[in-house]
Length: 349
Image (tube, rainbow, N blue to C red; front, side, top):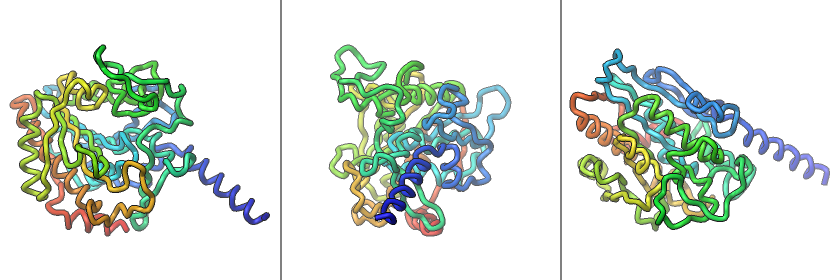
């Protein structure tokens, strides 16, 4: 009995440490910064109220704008809004580790909702981990950790910029980062995180923004790009590229009022060419711990990561070319095959 009590105490201490550890620390232990990273900032640089909270998270800046003319494009790739959507996070890690920006500026936020990576549906005090050799990749739940929020969930929730006709959502959606854009200064921590990310896009004069997601196998959003009507032509060109390069049948989703609070919908209102990319996650919607995330027969991790990276490469290129003389962006180092991504995953295992 004594041994069991000691084991329980040790596990409790580990759980508390894991939950309390700053994302600024644990992300740096996971991702291996490549030579393309110019500087690492924190999200709280753009909204100081997040500083020393579990919602603060690293912001990786790649490339340099030349002068003050604004002629070079500024773009952002964001993932981890839902901390259980692992392929998008790993795609962001690839960019940080292996890509270079020879012209323009690219900002990468791999764990947009760091709080979501502090817990899981299976264990409220612990995240989940994916073993990749000598490093482990932390992931968590779709929503922010309720224990780290400033307010309890409301009875129902309506995104901050939704129209009067918007149908209210379940109260827990107040902890869904991808329903809280553009965010509010005085909302809960999730709303403040959305506000900080929006402020980051404004402060960095971002012209193109991608948000990488995953959906359950039964969702209509699997293998899709979502964009506002004004950016659908860019997405359509990218879809053709992705299908040619990956063999995956992709589809476009036309964004509309019911997408209020979504990243691409609200960022698009700011004049940003914004896109949301969805790949499948075989463990969703319950985050089934028995599912092999790496080698799943239907949606292996290498394929999901590769598709995200192909989509990012094409969307960044087409959106930048659409800016004409207003911006130039050159990003090198994207993978040429699923096998290349698979080798990268194997190297880290």
